Length: 317
Image (cartoon, rainbow, N blue to C red; front, top):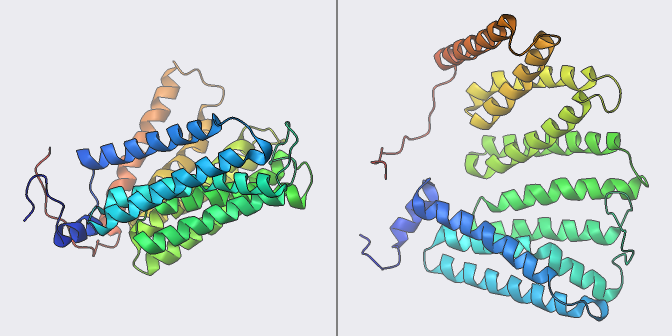
């Protein structure tokens, strides 16, 4: 039993791992961690420039060690979520540490107009790979699934940075294709983790992977590369597949992306040339809403019943 002001017992810490919850402490921890991260990066950016950015490197390493050390101490004390967020903050600082190291050894581009998306740089790619590795090592230490958010974000950015090495000054089409391929690979990793029974670990792979694919298809749907159907048609096909698979997989993330991917193109095609204030437009929206509701009934009726244990309901706070 836990008393006021005391550290949580090992049993409480274990329960916290097994049943993550949306309560006031967790909300404050996560929002506080994001605020700390942005503030820390801002402070590092304010460090006066020196020869080879030595001071920036020292400050970055200092913050990194502090956050990782505090995270380790919190986890050892049974505070799993705050401790994991400490490690996540440290991982978020790895690009700053990598920049400092690359500047110190003279490999980071010095051009003030350098753009890593246009001008290839192995230093930038290696910094991204180091961040990905740091996220995986931190997860191995903490088993804190939120660290996969940093891994997925670093993976998506590093893949885009790598394109400028393979092809100098790549166009938007190359970036979009890279996003689709990388996003699909991340979703596949998420499915493998699902099959292994690690659903919480798989969450960020699904979210980040589908987000990358959605952004790329939305770009094509704008018609920036020619025919807008180059984006709309793959979007509606992929959306239908993802939506139908959401129920048997029991993945709400798949349902959300599937709904958007399937119904946004339909809404676009059926309302083209219609005034948003017209009766026809309203009927189309009504039909889409009814079809969504009906699809939910069908999927609930025929989908595989959940096998996970149901947590005991708690009183709302």
